[in-house]
Length: 130
Image (tube, rainbow, N blue to C red; front, side, top):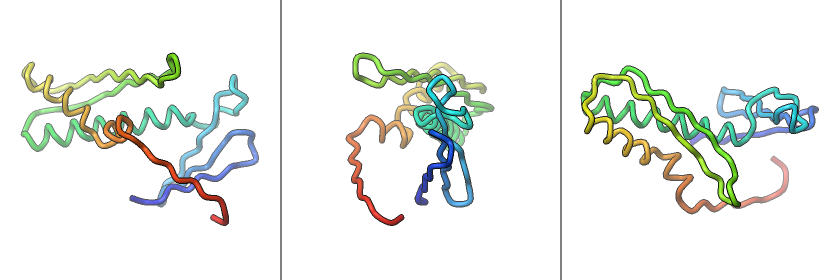
């Protein structure tokens, strides 16, 4: 996996995220004091889960020879009583039987980002020259 480098900008909350040759800007919405120059950190987290979910479903269906034309994943997240709750809604377009659809919903729970978010995560933080 490539390193992710995040650098602050002159804006109050805007951050430049570099991943290999890709650049993304993160920011907070204007009502949170940001300039809305990009998605917020939690929105990026939801985007990572959604992308991984869709990739996992499409890959599994392809290996099984199932016809899946499109996967859409709608995610919302919010803190509820100290717990971050993510709601994920799948729309799977394809020529599928009911049991195949049920299996793809189960497969969604096995995507690597889902497994990371539902397992113990350890973050080591150091300070010094980047």
